[in-house]
Length: 236
Ligand SMILES: Nc1ncnc2c1ncn2[C@@H]1O[C@H](COP(=O)(O)OP(=O)(O)O)[C@@H](O)[C@H]1O
Ligand SMILES: [Mg+2]
Image (cartoon, rainbow, N blue to C red):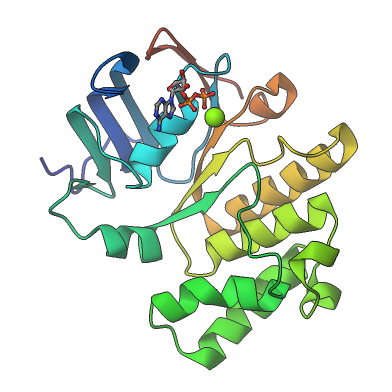
């Protein structure tokens, strides 16, 4: 399936799509996604809401190529993700991921953590350093570049994770409860930054969250339960 050039009226280009996606674990014993269909338009911010265990992380993992559906199609920038397509290219260039628990390497510095994906993508050192400087400026981390992750606060770690996810200039950011490990005040500050950076860079955001306050600040709010997306409303 190719959705290249797919348009939705004059709304914009579809950059992410799921078409009747099914996913279960343990040989079908745990049915999680039961026919999920969804499209995100370039530059949109989309919140994926729903109770714990409803399949938000599972869906994000499929979009990021970290797992594959049992049935149905998942496409990024018009190219279907499957075992045969270039998953490494997807992960290195097209999609950035921010996890609830940052997944940074604690013994390495902020700078070293952020440079890892650029090495994997073959980006030259000078370009990578310039990009890190730009992102660190935007997220207020310039003074922390040579600090080890274990010395940073929770908010600084999530901001670092945001920088790392955007180092290779992906057009899509998948965020799984990106502020879920933070207190309320820090959570709002980190989310402000996240929205600011994705707007500046024209990145499409799909974020799993159970925080309604944050979800309502996205362009769209999707409700997930019983393995499906039941409602898709424009929040703004
Ligand atoms: N690797 C796995 N093996 C078995 N069950 C899993 C696995 N990953 C998730 N699950 C189960 O799938 C369901 C959906 O999980 P998840 O996508 O993490 O939900 P959410 O992110 O909405 O909380 C849960 O019941 C969870 O226990
Ligand atoms: Mg989850």
